[in-house]
Length: 371
Image (cartoon, rainbow, N blue to C red):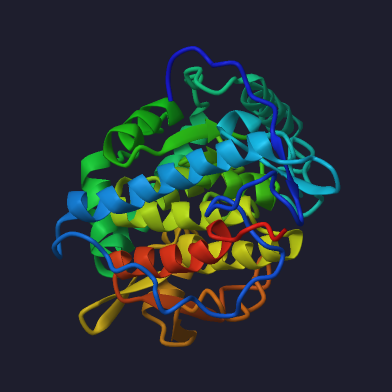
């Protein structure tokens, strides 16, 4: 995104019943079906042609968003239940959960007043930034550059044998170096050129609905602060190392980016209960997903790729359970601080994963208001 910010439109309200005089794929009923319809559309284009395969999903997403905008403009706001954003301008990036500049007592930086003050300063930069403005370039401190270098060097040892092919190709193009901490504006421009995704800074762990809604508009909310230097290989929250190393490379791949956007599109129409389920689907794909490569499995989830211990545990230890991804099924409990994940879900390919989640998301985006 670039240029001046257009005037923000007021967000429309969803009525759990009636849409004024029309029915369309941009609307939904409050009740969801248990399984996808048998008439899910076949993929278009020839196998291996990224541009051809990408065209149909992109057109579909644009159609859904445009239909959403038209329907919300005509919707009767009476008895509304929640608000659906019309654009990225309607998404609040200030609702932070768990961590902000105020850290919990078990955070490595809790007793470091200088670290907390710097975190607050960076958080304020994120809150003040308007959509479309250039992301401020930070002069990272010596201890922050050292933290980046230590984490990157250690992870680079495992990447060739543990990370998926698409990640390795992207990392080569991004050319991460231990002596240079990447700037969010630079990686934002790379994503814009490759898959059309955008980076929007955020002060900390964003509310799940706001974060997932952002993905629908191809916007990834990213932190800009560094984890505490005392533990370069650990963070209890998202930080720049997790975002840059874990998320950015994969977001340059069109199939993967499409797969991520499908979760976001579904979230636009999801109830609060369904948002929790979608958060788990996101967790077990975007954060902790694995993909088959021949007879092996390789990592593509950001939570795996940005953690040396998790990477080795998930791919080579043989201890966790592995299963095919089924977004309709009840998902396992998400593990935060109780060690590594006990179960990982495996895709056959990103092309197949994008189609699977596209079919799944249509159960949300194709819902209709009932008269």
